[in-house]
Image (cartoon, rainbow, N blue to C red; front, side, top):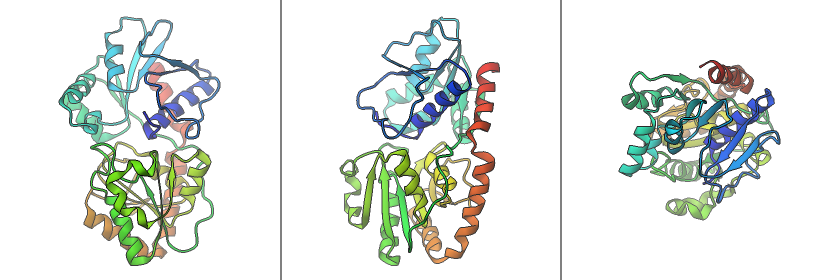
Length: 326
């Protein structure tokens, strides 16, 4: 397992709930290879429990965060209020029929599902019917804030290629970055949770990178978001990606290619958003290079949206209410 946005959101939940006076335990089912030392700070008040077995005795509330855990909790007879925190239509990550079946069964659990995306709820309801579901957004840490931008045209690429079927499987972001590098002389920087060598399909585009950052620390990540003229982010599907809203809170506009997802991104208001299509993605990215005068307005609207909608305090009020009263 590697640290990704979904894990970071789970830890944010745990930290904020603990700060509100709740006794919180994070159970790590598959600890091998976890790399959270730089990416995520887990509050010392959050208890860490490692192991495959799920034992709900002694807990008032349990929240599953992936399909197998949701099914295990559904089979558990402990007296405990249960929820399934579903951050994506999980079956889209892998075409394996066995994985699809596991996911589809988990969507039918007897307890409520908490989701973060309207289109994911639509997908899940194909299997769940009218079972209880709640919709919440994510917050963004106040660590993310505006800073000094690079001089000249700098483009940040978040995610350097796709690592599962829902991500940038056609390498739209590296391909568009190459266009901007060749046509505008853009300085291209990029980051991902993986080493550069992991992205073998994208190797032919490495020559355009002035710098690649692997799993940057929180401090390094904030600086990366502050620096660019704009950011490129491409996924075939996403529920609610962390990177565009973190960049938004740092005053950086995202040019986003996604078939479905990212409820916080509003094209022409706080981002530039197109479908998962190379020609459209490249066209809108070129537009951003040509129209620097447009950026301050998009940046300002993004900062206003972030201040209004992306507060963890607001989100946790909603989440705490669901967990206690749902």
